[in-house]
Length: 422
Image 1 (cartoon, one colour):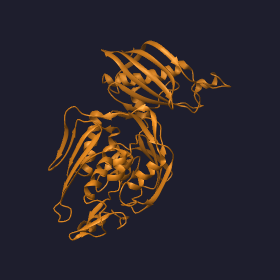
Image 2 (tube, rainbow, N blue to C red):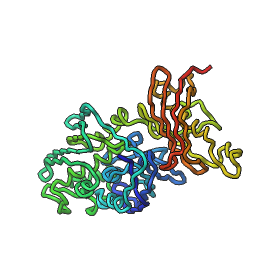
Image 3 (cartoon, rainbow, N blue to C red):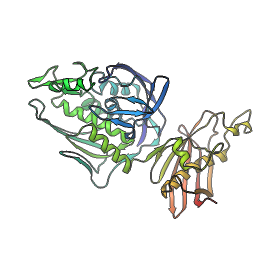
Image 4 (cartoon, one colour):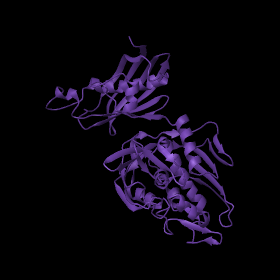
């Protein structure tokens, strides 16, 4: 299956559920392997915050992300809609510090994504799946992932309450089903808990318009949209929290009485065991010996056992454009190959568990079947995918492809060796 993004930008405004602050989100198309990420500000500072479990700082009645002092509250409804509608790559610009609550469900976000159109990208979708059951238990609460195709979610809740009590749902997650059966389910609160929630400084934007209020005698602001609306909303929360793994999940996911803290811990463990890793330029510099003007990778966006994806942003400030060619600047083909080799070298160093302080280098030992398909010019963004074909000892053979958008710029087969620094 191919990765997907939205077809055009959409804008949604409203008041945040917990902060009570009015905000606007702009959902924007993104390139393959960019993943889901927020762009938010704090005064004069704007920060990109990947929607990954690594950046979760709080899970009290909502999932909160933070990076470099910029915090975003209650991301789970929006992220649940993004996941449920099948989106892999999305830029979310947020004017404020919390997405709008809308009606307390994911429906407004899901409909906006549907109306923007879902676009298939020229990149394979990456999945997390298990061969053996993977589970985590938290007292009487549990999460279990079983082997399977697609994604089925089974969720059960059991409240000591006369109205909600025990509820259960088991449902296949795909966009049409999600839009109809899960997205409309609203967040809910027991009336007896409202005073405590307010004392915690939360629900400042809460109202009868964006939350189902449940009293011992029934639904205060009924009727419900579904007889089991609370457990359906729990599925929305779960999808939003587990989207923080950074990849799609394939299998049968069973949740028993769990909430945000359990979902995020489960996502962190799945990400650690199966999800691959991402590295910004600061982390790249810790591993790579190259420096200006010959460091030709800006970011590693995905690192697995046998596949690495890196980014090289090509700007007019590259020193080689002074002579290649002043009147028609084109990135030299040998440097495109070098960029692929550096991304592959990162994979090789990590594959053999070379730590940040090790005195190691990666040398080319062969380059075969090089083909150049299009020129690379200033303003282009190279997405470099390198796959391990064969590995033994400290020698590796890898296949690399460099793309600009969906177009192949260069492809080659490379051999390399890890050596000690002289």
